[in-house]
Length: 252
Image 1 (cartoon, one colour):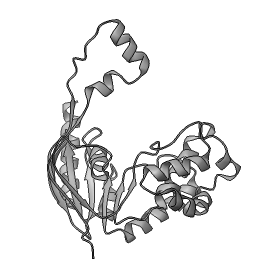
Image 2: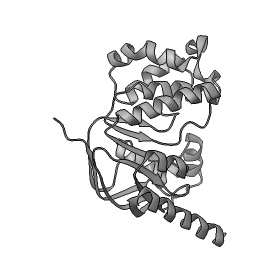
Image 3: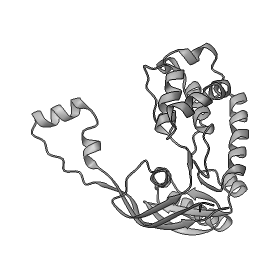
Image 4: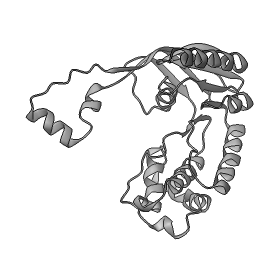
């Protein structure tokens, strides 16, 4: 029987400043033409992060925007490389993170099911075996054969969620992704998420909703400027988060 768990020790993660300075071909050409040099320092996104999450734990990540919660999830998922430290993740990961990952605007909904599935680690055969289930859950009708550049934000949510929710996984990583979509789909998606939470061996949830955090999780990690500044029972962590928010509001 395999061991499930997340063990991180002294994780340091940086965003390359070059990626910010040359976000487009046009920016790169203008920089070369003007003989400009990149003077921005790399962004230190996660700092000395050490934490262990064991089977059975439901952990909420709290913190203000830009504190490092989403970066932490993507690092655990293996989407962001670390500069130093030890990252040990044992078990299959099911990650409901950025909805735009693995999507091609010119491709149809069906084609994008394949692209996103491959990006999330499935084989072509596995994606095809789940295709009917994914299409039925997304419930996009004839639009499944249209390029996704014609989709609304809500339709994109439906397709992306349907693909990701079809995956099997021991470790469930959740970001606050359900910000669009009609009421009926939102209710269906919430039911599916609660089912995924019950099935998962480990759940890590990044959220601003302290009520949801207390309802789902028993443990919390409070992030600030890329660091974990508090780790403890969820009631204690939400209390510390409220103090942090009040202190921030007082300084504004």
